Image 1 (tube, rainbow, N blue to C red):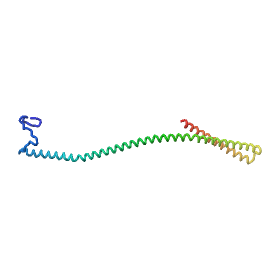
Image 2 (cartoon, helix red, strand yellow; image 1 turned 180 degrees about the vertical axis):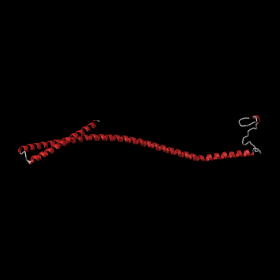
Image 3 (cartoon, helix red, strand yellow; image 1 turned 90 degrees about the vertical axis):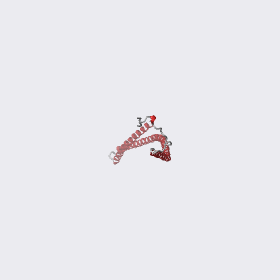
Image 4 (cartoon, rainbow, N blue to C red; image 1 turned 60 degrees about the horizontal axis):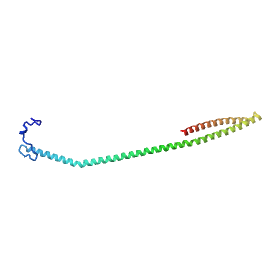
Length: 185
């Protein structure tokens, strides 16, 4: 007995016939019909597969078209991103230059403000000296007069103005020194 379950020795077995050479006998008539049906089903299956082929090709073309469109949009996005990054670099460079220019332009403004505060201080000191002379003159001529009290009050206000002017000069000098340090950076 062989693997297929045949018990006859190979020499005694009938020869295999092709589907065309097989004759219709009573025994194998139903077998022939079944073989014809199988062949017919295979032909129909192949025909259906052939009919599906254009649809599959169309879908494949659509997928390929979508892939190309996605690839183009991806490339365009990458180019746009590169352009944006370049623009950001340029704008940050311009921003840095503008900030440097602003920093440099503040120094002369601060120096002018400091000099103005020093002039204000000099004017207040000059006025204070004049008030001091008036006070000394009035005190020498009449130590109890109303005018002496008024001059003393003005003199006190003058001292307050001197203190404010000194503070303003000090603050202006600090700002100018900070601006000078910024220029050195």
